[in-house]
Image 1 (cartoon, rainbow over the protein chains, first blue to last red):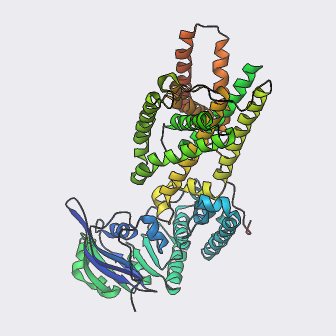
Image 2 (cartoon, rainbow over the protein chains, first blue to last red):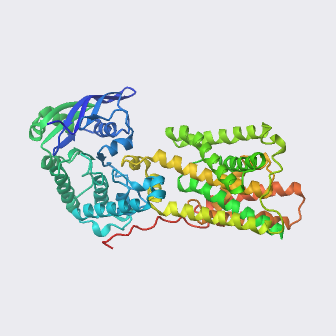
Image 3 (cartoon, chains in turn green, red):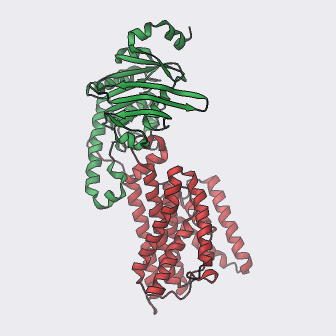
Length: 252
Length: 292
């Protein structure tokens, strides 16, 4: 079976700092891959390279076998790469629902031509997006907050909204950047459950996370990055047992 | 009475100009100062078409709008693809450069301006018919912008303004939205130009100088940036203001600098004391759904 997301020999440097050094990895349907490593290892940079925020210097990235090299950020999202951000980047003047309604892979309302000549189709697409958004919020028990301004929500719930917005993109690939940082209690359990459901539904998920118990609970396999390179990869238990990695990670 | 009509017509024209300028700088957050040149493009296009081809005013005004819209792409396509910051620089160059061309081309009447634009209506009805047309154009512009801002397109613009990178990473084409908004705003300025040309029948290049964007900006800032009704309030107030100072009966050499000083002072005062302007921005229409 071929991988959903396939990186091959990806290389990127900023001046003298190499943030991605010959990165090759694959994520398959239903897999949750953990991406771990110390701060500055290049984990978020790798997400930025995959989503097109920063172009790679070399290497190839394929989604379901189709190369996305040279594609813009929005084109990659439309090809089915959804992502969340460590600091959420929610639209702060908008409600929870509005944040999500602009987020499907195709948003009919961004075309002036369609707005003028097919207003009915745009309205139906909007209604459909609303329904989809409410269904996602319901899974997170957030549907009663749909009309609240995102900035009124506590941090943990904002983090969930960040995930909910990304899930509006029904593409095959989901990249989560530190979904658990600052999230506790009920929101923590919800986050875990939803990410697991998404993988079971067939998405290829990649999680950058410092919370090792979250990684242990969710991921079957992981890669360990440091200074832009993949040092080790494999089963999560084996990785955590590795002494050199523990030293690099925890500095002990 | 003709005096009142000419003020009403200017109100209509400036409501179109200020509202469309506000769509560009307030709503979409695109920094440009080239609005006077799109006003000029509309005015000269419809004037020239009427003089040389006898084109009727409605078709002429629409042609002016189309030319302004197409010319806007000459700025927006190259600069917005790189980054929004470049738009300001290219807009200055475009404004200054194209006005020089207008000032030097024989076709556009060079320094002396374009005169003898045929009027579609003569006689005593002329004043009120033109007032009606100009005010209707103003009202239509405000309603069009309100429709854009409150609908799905406005929701996309809000999201883009809040966080452009997050917006693009959802699959939205921010560059295209900016180019479209810039073209729509510029085309509306072209419509204002057409009405101006057919009413005043004379165009002088000086009135489209870069400083004219200062007047429009004052209307936007005083009225309320990003607000639909703000530019209307701003346009009416700032057109009434010079009329008010004429009653002071100062010599003409004092009038223009005084007006400039008052306008500048207003912008500074508003930016410090009431940055949102007189009318607060309008939020997109709330999303209605079953769970409410």
